[in-house]
Length: 122
Image (tube, rainbow, N blue to C red; front, side):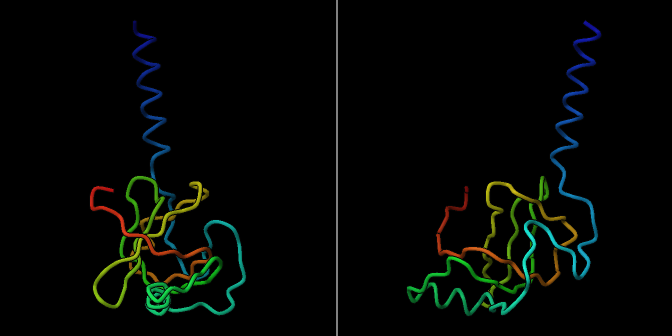
């Protein structure tokens, strides 16, 4: 019985340790995910306007300010839009995570951008 409780306790502590966002200060120049060369990062507000107009962005670099990061794993982040709304970024296939220290920092993100309305519950 002691060994069973010890095993369960060990597994729970392992799960809690894995569910933490990466440590770090998110300093200028830090990179997360696949490396890429910053070429011409578009302002997120301009990209959103073009998306609403029917444009598509299968591969684009976007610059914006981070206003929130997933506190459990760092698996999503919210970027600031000019009208007080936010844009949510989810990491593809949980390929990497972002430290909570990125809140308030300006970032350049490389990837596909699409417009999708989600429910509050999601």
